[in-house]
Length: 167
Image (tube, rainbow, N blue to C red; front, side, top):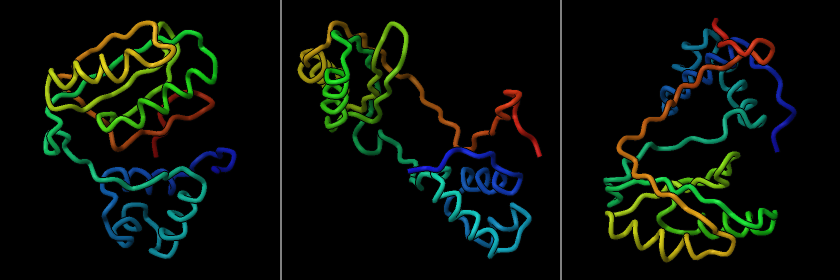
């Protein structure tokens, strides 16, 4: 369980940015990027992991290379919006092999389900057979993803001002 969040100092921010840009680089390269000794870099990265700031290291794999040529986001409304109904829905869609991500959101929709499928027939089957008929689903809207971009290096914000922190 992560500790109570505390602000990252300039060294931590440089380490996080360097890891975001290339998590496979050596500790020596990380230390150089952060302007610290390799022993300090190693200790700081371990502390960032312990605090839950760095939550893991992942390969960025193209879903199409795994046969998932089509991605879609399914926006779902649930009724009743009880904890039990929401948790059961999220658990069920998370278990689907087509699910890439699940987000619980506020607003008109309750849950967004990001799917990766082989094509439109597969998408139709998943939405109709595996999502729409789950308990609590009262509405769903499906949007095809034309392009997906994700930032791997995320600029930290100053909690006091809401502005980006710059070193």
